[in-house]
Length: 73
Image 1 (tube, rainbow, N blue to C red):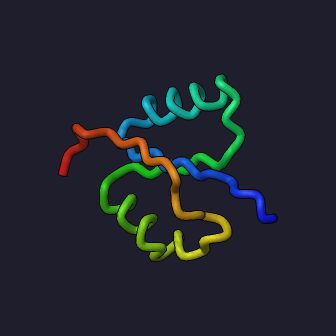
Image 2: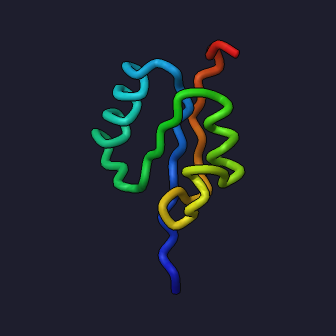
Image 3: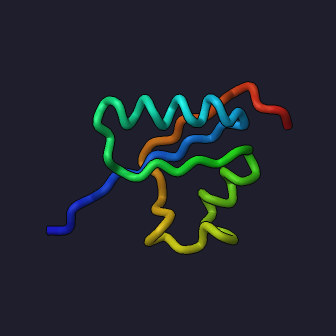
């Protein structure tokens, strides 16, 4: 049986918020991968597996996405 490692994708343009979110996940014991992207277009690249995110071993498809709704276009 293959063990599943959930992957969290955080989409936020504020580096302080990125840090706080990652710290909060670690504080509650989350050990699964947390990937952070800085804008919507990078999030789309991640989801599509394009560019630097093409390696799905390293950048697994996320099982949970946390996004900032007030990012600039």
